Amino acid sequence: MENNDLDASQSIFDLNPEQRAARLQPATDQVKKDIFAAGLPLVYQDDHCPTESYFIHEYEDGRTYLMLMDMDTRTFTLIKDLTHA
Image (cartoon, rainbow, N blue to C red; front, side, top):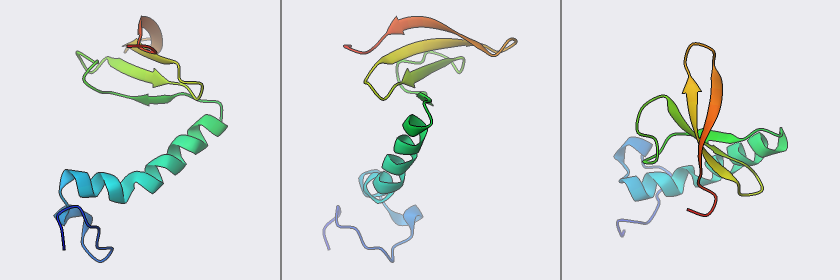
């Protein structure tokens, strides 16, 4: 079996990062669909986030923003539009 082939009986903990991403993709797609169906943005952190107070807000229409969360008030401030970055 090649490195990228998926074996459903193989533990997720034994998969390399590419295999793990492929195994989880259907669940990831469903969660994203459910979040957008509820009218909410997908909120996550990635390399654009310099500290734990920064988050990415991705909307169903493709808009993507870098947001800063005030940890005391739990409010967000738009820092940068990443839509076309």
